[in-house]
Length: 288
Image (cartoon, rainbow, N blue to C red; front, top):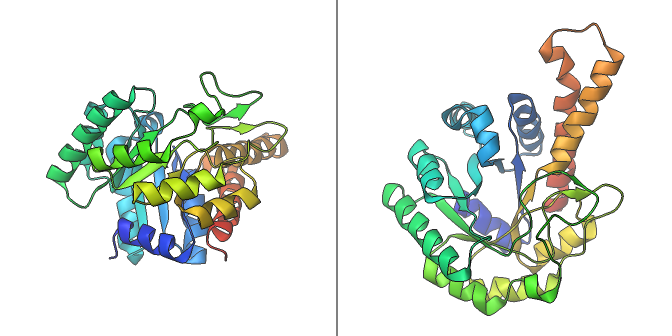
C-alpha cells in the first residue's frame, strides 16, 4: 500500500490536504473512518498523550491496523503532541506510522536538540516512520475558549520566521513541520478563530522544504483553510470540533431517551455527528 508520506506529497502537489482527526474512543473512530471510506480519501487518526493513554497505546494501534487490513484502506495512526523522548520511543516501538515531538515550549536550541534525538531514534527503528517537529507555542488543550490560551500570543514575534524554520528542519531532519502561523488549539465559543498568516505560510513552505502541518484547525474559517492549503499546508488537524459534535449529540440522545441503557444505542447519534463533521472537513480540504 502507498505510504503516508506519498499521500501527503500527492496532496501537496495537487493543492489539497490530508485530514488528521483525533479520537479517544471507538465511537468517534468509527465516525471518522466511515466519513473517509464513503469519500474514498486517505485519513490520519491522531491520538495525543492523554487520548492514547485512555484508549490504550497498543489497543488503538490494533484497531487502526484492522481497519487498514480489512480493505487495504489508507488509514494511518499518528502520535499527536508528544512531549518527551521517552514517549516518542514508546510509540515508535509500538509501530505507529507517525509521531510529533512537540518542543514548542522549549528554547530553539533545546527544541532542535530533542527533536533531532527523536528523529534519529525513530529512523533507526523504522526508516518509514514520519517524524514531525513544531515551532511556536499555540496552547495545548483542544477545548472551547473564551479567550486566548495562557501563554499564547498572536503578535509578529510569535509567528514562525521562515529562516528559523529552515534551520530547524535542516538540523533536525524532520519529515513534516508544524509552524505557528496564527493558529491556536481550541476554538472560540462565539466567533471564528483568529485569521491565519497566509503569506507567512507560503514563505515557510518555500524555506522549510518539507510538507507543512496546520495544528488547531477547529474554528478556522473555510476561506482561511482554502487559502492555507493553496499556500502550502498539506495536513490539517481537527479535534475540538469532533469533541463538540460528539458531546452535543450525546446530550440529545440522553435527553430524548432517558431510560436507554445500551451504550451502542446511546452513542449512535454521536457516531453520526462525528461522521458528518469529518465529511464536511474532508470535502473542503480536498475540493470535493
